Length: 97
Image (cartoon, rainbow, N blue to C red; front, side, top):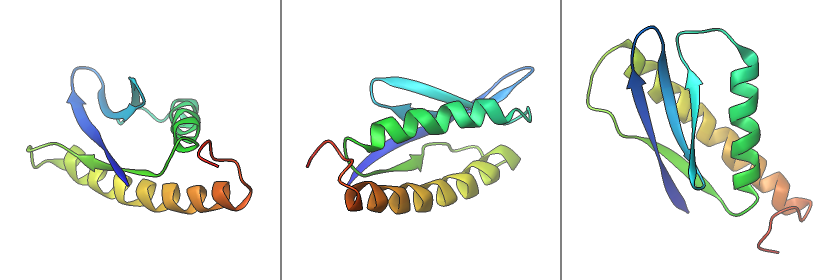
């Protein structure tokens, strides 16, 4: 299983969780409550997941609230990714088959 990089981009006025998705990066804004932002990121992740199973690992050394939020978010995201990948395989929707 491939491990992809996740980082935190702390800035003003917004802070983002940045996820590596294929050749591009997807940003989830942590300081804004916009479900469309999360939905768009998740759709990009689903497209990449069809190519093979992966998980995210946070690369961040700053111990703050954003770090804690992202650690928990990525734990849940990785569980969801594994479950969805299992369903993709079950319905033969992965590109490896």
